[in-house]
Image (cartoon, rainbow, N blue to C red; front, top):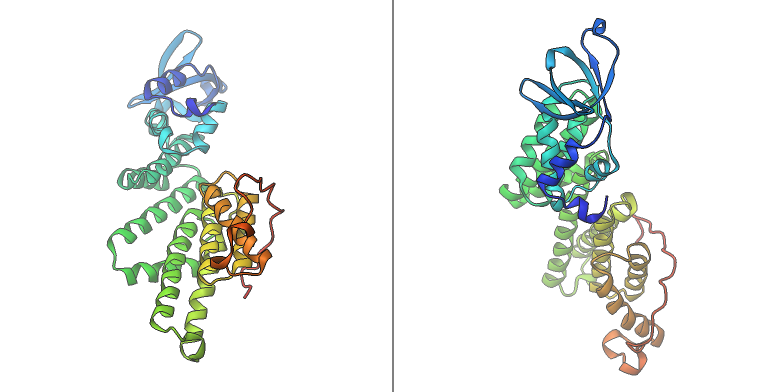
Length: 335
């Protein structure tokens, strides 16, 4: 399915749903009625499943159905995987057409519902996303899907906390999530680590602003160092533990570069930016990373501070940078 197909309208999705062919399997609740048979499940109606075999359509009452097994087209698989704003119309069609089957053994309605909930979360439609996730968490017959739905409700609940609770309460709950290290809910971990990274970086700046001679103060220095290391650890968390989450990982590396830039550690800024370009060349930070990297490398090569580097010391804009070097490996607890 192409990007254009992912952005299909509700009408287009409905037509695709009705033209899937006999991809699905239906089992009778009474074995004496015969073996399982293949058909195309068009939609779930209040009184039964509308199914199609060839040109014939009929509605099977739910009390006659022992279980179903939905087939998936390539396009349907991609719809589930690519939960984005543009997929909402199509996902909503599939969810509404199938969610009455959620209690049937073998139904995959929850997969479409969870994808829709994730897409709605991205568009800040939190109430609808929460309602869908809760229905799946409590009604779906698949334990693994119920667990995923429960994780989605927890993520949405924390977003609500961020919007309504006092800042100190949000921070307390965020640290509690990191202490539990619930890696099965990557969305929540990435959300709270990003939030805490920004808090720690802001605290680092505030400590230095309030204490210009912090390096000479034995009481302030450990506090400053704690905020510094926490901010870095949290910024690097996505790329270290969830590198396939490309957007969050690129954001984290970019923020790590900003922390190193703030502390005037040019060598580490260069190292992080080179990793960013090598690992996530298609990120939203690519252009800015390249722009920042050129004068920094020139400054390091010349031995002069960045502010003193002369234009002649910098690579000309027309000169190609060449491919970035292979990515380095970070130690989360490195000084």
